[in-house]
Length: 61
Image 1 (cartoon, rainbow, N blue to C red):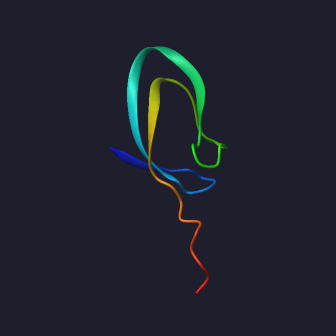
Image 2 (image 1 turned 90 degrees about the horizontal axis):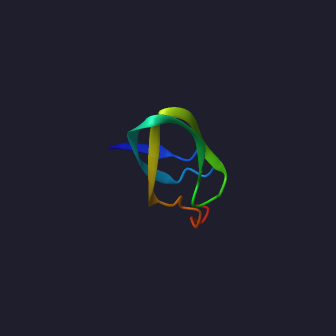
């Protein structure tokens, strides 16, 4: 298991890569900020599972 953070909002995902028998071109959008966080053109296809949303509710200290 690998931890992946969205480069835009820092949401944490579990990243698992699977192998398929054909080349696939696609991308994954973040489930929190909806920006493209990862793209690929390969037979190694990632699967993302949201683990933790970024803590945006913190009050300034």
